[in-house]
Length: 232
Image 1 (cartoon, rainbow, N blue to C red):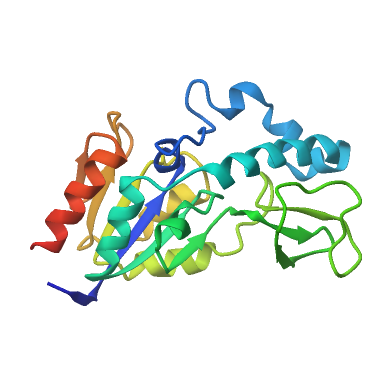
Image 2: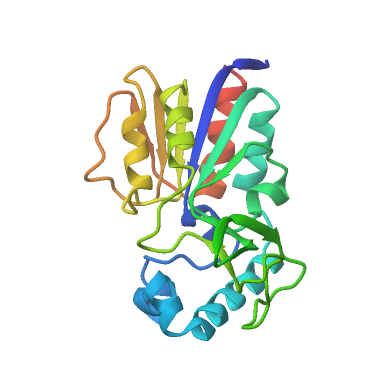
């Protein structure tokens, strides 16, 4: 039964993409075990060694281009056929788009886009897997990844907060809720909002009214939850 007046907001993190083969950052064996944040993901890193930063994101971009959506991504598309569904993602990949979701806010940018170093509001869809030194934006300045680095403002945070404030249902998938300021978004929920967190690990610090922890992986548990919501 379709209920387009009921707003469901999805907050997704690296865990949902990990099940499509894209490495997470913070888990054991994640990207931060291989790279130092300060070397590749800050404005200071860019100033110090832009070539290293570009190489890091070029490698990630190649992996994203090859990655395919998983069952969790496709289940969220099916949910959109029945409810007003909005996705807020901390991920910089395009797996939600590839699956067919339509209303997506990328909090931390999109790796398949570039921006001018002179103006972050000027963004460009890349037609290549690589950005190299000397590649210029139309405004004549060097291109850099359209990614929010540590120490930079999250431009669409207020939009995301407003969505969650008006949500009837919030589903948190694949995020440890340890990355700020995005981790604060769950606090924008009303007490009446139904809250689901899908995570294979125990939750120790997240305690809210109407919160249900579904212990398991996204590809297993999201289709089950979507089926339940659709057939209410």
